[in-house]
Length: 96
Image (tube, rainbow, N blue to C red; front, top):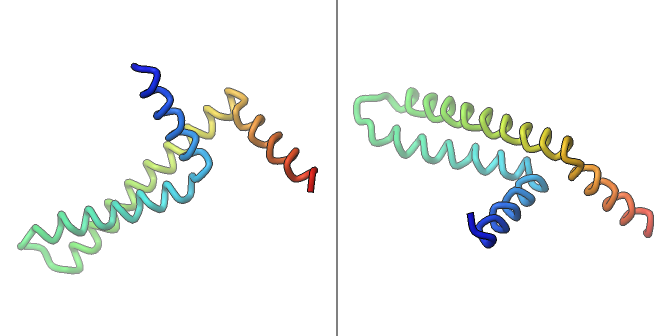
């Protein structure tokens, strides 16, 4: 993997760590929209069934995103990266 690609992946990971809820909410919303778009192409389903399927698909995607966020949190906790972020936050608040 190139140095530029590694830096890009690391910056994406850092953004996800800082914005976990926004990431999960965005995945949920895109899951709803994508599932509704797919289900609307199925002509032999009732509207209520399409909506229920979209909600279930989005719910499964959200659970997967939450599990991913938990893995990232666990990794940060074990690597010490979270402790560094907390220390920076506390230092910043002490100077106010």
